[in-house]
Image 1: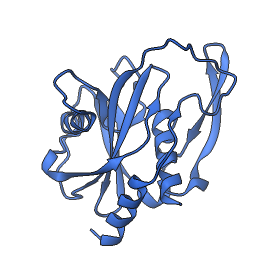
Image 2 (image 1 turned 120 degrees about the vertical axis):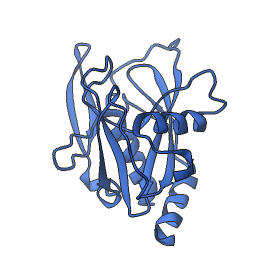
Image 3 (image 1 turned 45 degrees about the horizontal axis):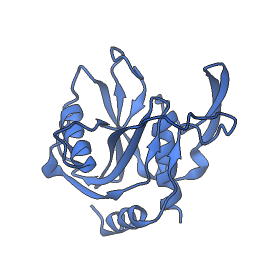
Length: 196
């Protein structure tokens, strides 16, 4: 692992960033003022060799089946902090143990269409650490070069119908993987910090 990569990630994690949401690109969508957001956390694991670890969710899941996602999930009552949530979920979903993860900082929260307030944690992880996807939740674990995800030019805006209206969202495809929605939006926020 290069000191340059660590320095770059630490600087990105320390920069201020605005909160984001699945509705950023659809200003005509009005959200209810009394909505209650559930706390959740995800890990953005970057290996020492400069790759971001992502998952494809199991097709059997009720929410977002087959979509590309970070390891993460809802905060459980026993999680003292959201960082604990991200570490626990990462270990449960992809078998990446805490001793192989160094959290460098947190990025601004992201609100999802499913009413979660997600806190992303940027982490440096051991590239050689074995990964074991949990079959009930994760269909596949794959890696994408950070340099691809760090370039804002690789992001496009697409749209689809949602609840009778058009909703726009970011995409950042990589090979056969269609990375979109909340995952792409949080990666786009990271790309903005890395390019400052």
